[in-house]
Length: 161
Length: 157
Image (cartoon, rainbow over all chains, first blue to last red; front, side, top):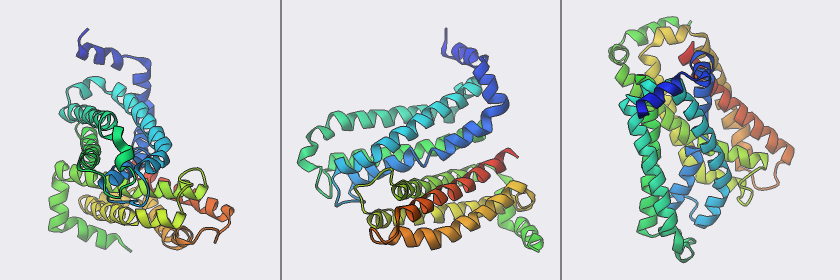
């Protein structure tokens, strides 16, 4: 089965037609409002890595504060996002903004993984410093840029479907 | 009362130029959403702290200072991009029921923000009882999310 055929199958499901025909405004509303919980909280961690805010707190403390809200936010984002995709799967498949959004999400994931498995490993050496080392600041900056680009292409998907 | 002003705004060069192109409006919506994230993310953090369910290791006034720049920046971006979006379709927005609800809720949310919210979030620890803090936290969430929901409803009505 090709990817496009999978999208056709998704679009023929019951859940897809429910979202398309009645739930769409509510699901999309939840997707937009949860921006505050997901990207709105992850940005504090990124800004801390950049040394731009909360400098008196260690990186770990900021992460621990943000973690539960950030994860809850991304759970809402991914589940509502999946429903929105299901509603218009074939149109999304051929939409360039949607493809760019998936690529940016993958890059954000790769950036987080690289940070976690390399720079974060010797955090004990720099976690309390107000200005983390260049590699950590770069990871924070890349994360911020990627997430705000995800917002931008996400809004443009809604305009071009 | 406001009708002639709205009609004039829609007929200005800027209003016409913005209204002609869905691309221009789409990019303004991008800025509007970036502003939403910058404003609502930190506001949510403060509300969570007011409710006493998270960020408890931080002093409230300290969190308020840390987030002030981003909340102000987000609000400015939202108001600027929102005003331009409105200018691009002034008459039809002005007639819409959800647009009017959104503006009413926005005024209430702003008044609340610059009075009760500002006072309680800048106070030293223990100045206000947990009950007052929680009430302000609940109202903050309720008011700002009502504005956002009404905003979303404009697009679907």
